[in-house]
Length: 351
Ligand SMILES: NC(=O)c1ccc[n+]([C@@H]2O[C@H](COP(=O)([O-])OP(=O)(O)OC[C@H]3O[C@@H](n4cnc5c(N)ncnc54)[C@H](O)[C@@H]3O)[C@@H](O)[C@H]2O)c1
Image (cartoon, rainbow, N blue to C red; front, side, top):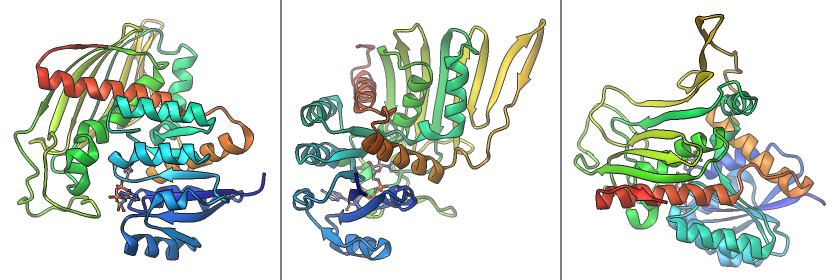
C-alpha cells in the first residue's frame, strides 16, 4: 500500500504525542484533523501542515482517502468516535481508557469485529523499555510464579480540572485516568490474568483544592473547577492466576510528594519496575539484588508514544499482531467498573 493516511480526532495535549510518532514515519501522512474547538484545530493543522480541518468527526470520516484515525478526545467521545470510524472502514488507535465503562468498551470491540478493522488501545507504557525488559524476564520464568503485586500512582496536588474532573465526560478521577495504566501494566506483565474479585474504596474528602498557592500543576486545556470525581482510591484485586494486586492512586492527597511505583513478586524473584528497575532474589543462599542497565531514554513519555504509533502503523501495513488489542481495554474497563461499584456499595465485587 501507499502512505497510510491518518486523521486525528481531538487536537488537545496528547494528540501532539501521536503526532510525534506519525511525523517520524515515512510511510504515514496525517491528512485530516478534527476538534469541536475550531480555533484549536486550525492552529494544530497549521502547526503540522495538515490539509483538511473539521469540527465534526462524522464529516471527516466521509473522506475516502483516510485509512485510520487516532481518537484523542475526552473519554466520553472515545466510544462514539471509534465506533463511527470503524463503521466507516477506518482503523482506530484509541487513547486510554478505552471507554467510560465496560458496556461501551464491549460495543467498541463488537464494532471492530464487525468491520474487520483494527481497534488498538493506547496503553503506551507497554512500549517502555522497562516494561519490555521485565516482560521478557517474566515470560522466561525468571520470577517464578507471581503471587503478589503492588502499584500506585499518587499525586499530592494534581487534579487537572476541566473535563478530567467532570464525571460525565471522564468516567471518574485518578482511578480511570492514572490507575488504568498501572493496573494494565500489572495484567500485561503477568500474562493477562482475568480479575476475579475487587474490593475498593474511593475518597472524596479533599476536593480539587484550587486555593493552593506556591506550586504549579498541569491544568486541562479547557480548565474549570467543577469536580465530581474521587480524590483518591485504594483497591485489592484478585486474579485467576492466584495473584493479588494492591493498588492505590490519587490526584489530591496529604502526602509528602508525588510517587509512582510498580512491583511484582514471584517465588523465584521479585522485580521493581518503577521508580527504578531492580530485581531481588537469592543465589547460592545469598540474597542478591541486581539492577539491569536500561537506556535512560527508553521508557520516556514521548519515546513510548513514538513506539506505540509505529506499532499501530505496522499492524496496518504488515499485519503485525497487535500487542494492545481492544479486548485488553475492555478487561481493564471491567476492573475499573468493579472498583467504582465496590467503593459505592462497600462490598467486594465478584467478576
Ligand atoms: N496515554 C497517556 O499517557 C495519556 C496521557 C494524557 C491523556 N491521555 C488521554 O488522551 C485523551 C485526551 O487527553 P488530553 O490531555 O489531550 O485532553 P485535552 O483536553 O487536552 O484534549 C482533548 C481534546 O478533545 C477535543 N474534543 C472533545 N470532544 C470532541 C469531539 N466530539 N470531537 C472532536 N474533538 C473533541 C477537545 O476539544 C480537546 O481539544 C484522554 O482520553 C486522556 O485520558 C492519555
